[in-house]
Image (cartoon, rainbow, N blue to C red; front, side, top):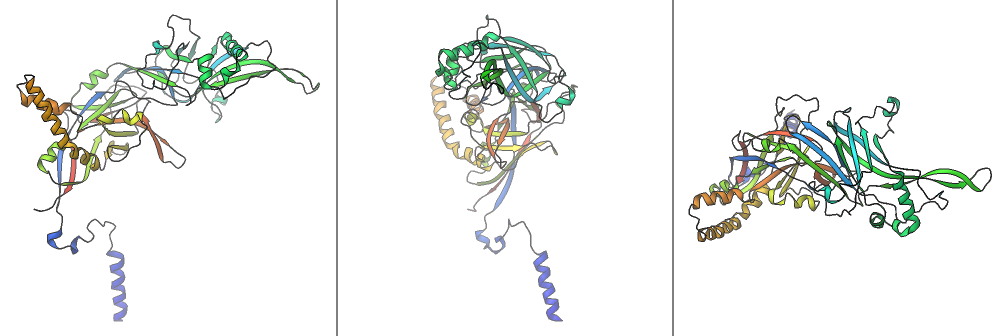
Length: 483
């Protein structure tokens, strides 16, 4: 019996004595003098809104329309696009009349923002200058690439939901919403005659753009209320040609053909965004900060690393937690089309905020971090940015040496208020600054993130913080050796 009770006691220790938390494993066995003391400290974090001005937008999506929001003002989106042809493209040898029967552009989309029935009108102009791969920022000037005094290729009235298409068709899974823009037939004929003139013009995309058709500029020139998120577009040239007839076996049957030229990743598609009205006013607010995409507002974060260094010079940083809370409502303004908080947020050092996107980087968990919005608690939580803080901490002696060097030069130039000068110098340095940027992610078939891009859809959030608002806390857990 005693053996039986002993077995039960051992089993109880096995099942109830274990804990998933192994943080203190082995600590109790260490000699008292070998234990590494740990501590934690909380420092206030300062944030402020900054204008993003323009963003790097190398994207397969195009954006078109105009939308006026009561809080953020008017946002306008237009784009420039080139078209490619398949390598060594060939028209049928039995073309009839060597002319086109019609030409068109199709803009395909599955999503949009705003009023589905807002009536808008787009205008299409032809480009007279080549786009190159350097034009990927959203402040590109379209006027540099087309003749503003020339007659446009086309106008087209549209709504985001095309009610001219029957409900039974629009609700099919195979239906792909699109705007069909009829172009002058002469443009299609020009394409065919350039082919007949020299087939090498259709050898590849570069030759096609250079010698046949440089591309289009599309903008909304009338109306307000919606932004289309365009996923695909094509330039189509229709023509007649002969094929063998089933009965005669001779080439005597007239049919219609289409040459389709697409706007793909191999050619340039440049988005142009303009924000008008209220962004500067919002950036000037000091009791909170904002996020607004696309190309609107970022939030800059000043990390209190110098305070930690002064108080804990030789300590090792183990974890750093920082959270940003979003207000449920941006303002009391009522609108039926509410922008959502950005789904993903990137924290990146201010000095890297441009090259990160230009070099197609991924968040490395050292100087850049990616997190997803927590809809349950309305927070963006960075659970551990210790490596970022440590990186900045290790750079402090270098930055301090630069400051001392600049201070000497300032004194030589007659600077007398050195205290004020130093304060301004540290405020302007990017050493301890990070920026919160709304982004979208690209995932592969295994749902692994393979790309991070600027969020180019209409999203926004109002965050607690600001220079004079509720202070945000950065909690640092650190360890140190006893002297």
